Image (tube, rainbow, N blue to C red; front, side):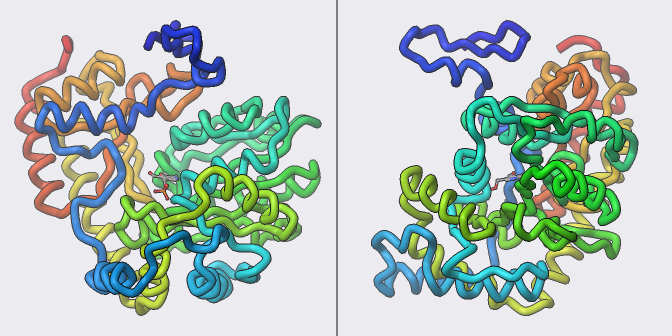
Amino acid sequence: MSSNGNGVHRIADARVADRVSQFPESVIREMSRVAAKDGAINLAQGFPDFEPPEALKEAAKRALDGGFNQYAITWGSPRLREALSKKLAAKNGIAATADDHITVTCGATEAMMASLLAVVNPGDEVVLFEPFYENFGPDAIVAGAKTRFVPLEGPDFDFDDEALKAAFTPKTKAVVINTPGNPTGQIIPKDRLRAITDLCVDRDALAVTDEIYEELVYDGLRHTSPATLPGMAERTISIFGFSKTYSVTGWRLGYTVAPKPLTDAIRRVHDFLTVGAPAPLQEAAVSALALPPSYYDELRADYTRRRDVLLRGLERVGFDCYRPNAAYYILADFSRLSDLDDAAFARWLSREARVAPVPGSSFFHDKRRGRSLVRFAFPKKIPTLEEAVKRLESRLLLGKVVAA
Ligand code: PLP
């Protein structure tokens, strides 16, 4: 594969479709492989190095023994959709029925792809905030959308209202809203969400939300689902998932919530993409939704401690960090530590310090904006994070890194 630096990533075989040349392999997943090769602690890809709640694993084993081994209903197991309907009402303030509005997918990943394929016509425009979660770019490309980017800037990753308005054109079909955000580690505050959703109403655009980190919020903050804001219920596809809240990234379970006609369209795409999410794990997910409130309190308390250990460590070593108030990532500027570019620095860290981050440019369409940034993920045991900090200290406190 080769890249010409202009967003063209050609695979040298004429049989490959043009659309595939428009995006590279995932840099995040690539860094996971680099980390494995280097024997590095993988703080690149966002997955826990600890186990999910015992009750979930037990429920999955019971489901395997209990006859849930064939296709579930394409839209998702009825029991799970009923439980999700209750969860959405209680936690998100979203009124959604199992029959008409909820579709269980293979992770939030499939949910986003199925949603965009369901609503985007070739040539339609999709607005993304940048930095953005790496998948959103290829998702939009595969759906045939043209992307417009709104920069998030400053310590709070806020956007300029005029820049947002300018990104909306008569061709805008949808805006992707990721709150809490990856890689920003920020909740979008309610008044800033209103600025986005009011524009959606004004310009008759859809919002496709990625709320996979809804439970991972710190410092007493609360997540707001954009679908609950005025005028948004009928124009929002809300996406949620089990991966992060229940530490089951390998289970591949997510779901969409949308008005009926949009749900009908998403279900058609979902059916032909995957038929359905894993049946026994859908049954087990019902038990996840029955966990008591204390589970979520402990989850947040544990993640707050993890954030603090890594944040303090990175700052001690000389990174300038964006302090996350949500999700489980720290974006860190390494200008004081090295003149290398982000890709070279990330590989150097993996090889020499044996701690692997993600190069910052993978979160930007304008790659220059990520040149001095790397992203560290902290869904790890405290001892793993302490060991990572120790390794970073042993290599980085020695002086500026100048050569890869
Ligand atoms: N959306 C965001 C913003 C993410 O950060 C991730 C994983 O890192 C995903 C979606 C993937 O979710 P899932 O495991 O449900 O496919």
